[in-house]
Image (cartoon, rainbow, N blue to C red):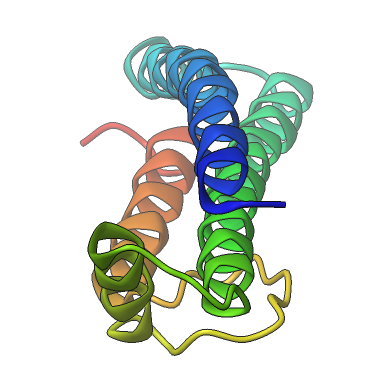
Length: 137
């Protein structure tokens, strides 16, 4: 494969990842709406359990999507780094990726390698669970 093919495949992956992310964030909004309705109006225990399962499932889907994006990014940088003739733009792509954990054979992980994203997702989980399980003051 040449540089153009590698970058074309990466861009195609970005498009599908973006569409999937938009749908997953819509479902995250639905989870927040459900949690807020439970918080404001109350709900039986079974509804709270279902809301918790749904909310955690949506967080999982979003984390998986983020992990797949990271794997695609690292795979592209690794593939480009293996080419003998690499353009200046391709070299910048590889160098940019090296700033975020290096370039190597990618490993899938649900834990974001960006600490800000990790904290953000922890806060999302806390907000969803607090709205579902805490009683209204």
